[in-house]
Amino acid sequence: MQLKPNAFKRALAQGGNQIGIWCSMCSPIGAELMGDTGFDWILLDTEHAPNDPMQVMHLLQAVQGGNTPAVVRVAWNDAVLIKRLLDVGAQSLLVPYVQNEDEAARAVSAVRYPPLGVRGVAGNARATRFGRIPDYFAKADGEICLLVQAETLDAVSRIEAIGKVDGVDGIFIGPADLSASMGLLGQPRHPEVMKVIVDAIKRIRKTGKAAGFLTPNVDDAKMLIQAGANFCAVGSDTGILVAGTAALVKTFKG
Image (cartoon, rainbow, N blue to C red; front, side, top):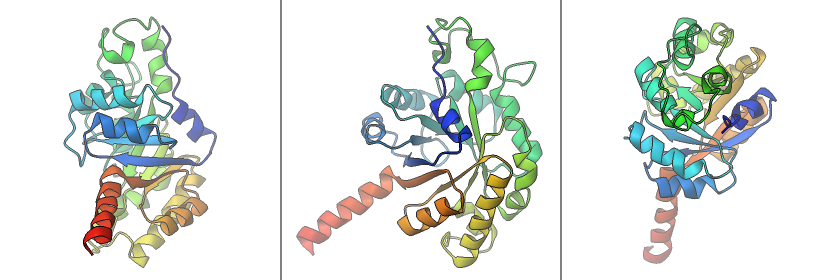
């Protein structure tokens, strides 16, 4: 049995535009449904969704049979949390609230085995197909895609330094926390926030890293893709369900 190549990591390295969808509902059926829709990637959340490693494993089982690569957002930049998600089979991780190059390097260390990092070694984890991938430990580091989130003005000011960290594949701008750090809590589409985001996207691409973003607004998504965002999530399961059910209620109840 061979280690499955990380198609998402390769697509980002080639610079192509990868359109994704956000999954927060902790439902394997929902994840499977969205994973078969045709998106280039699907985000499985553990930061702002109540998923634990067991639930993430079930979500991965639901989507890994299809053609849509999964990215798992870790709850925090913590080596233990990262290790557990890697062990259940995640190959691409999004690490929130990375403020500087030192924190980015810490995330890199967490996804790599010694001597390059501190990832704990488990011989029979799901990631190794329960020990059936004989060269897993030799190849695993090269198939991990690590994305980090810049979510404050301080973090955005350090984009160039974060982008220089070997092992970081992409930088994702977190609009909600960024707007809060600018004194504009709850206003992620404020013109001043959007100005910072557009500039950040352009600067990320100049470092040679992939640039990511999440927005359900079509016009914003198109503008940021034009600015250089090449892994942009354009909606979420919860947002789609809220909008769809609200539209039905309006149609039939006025």
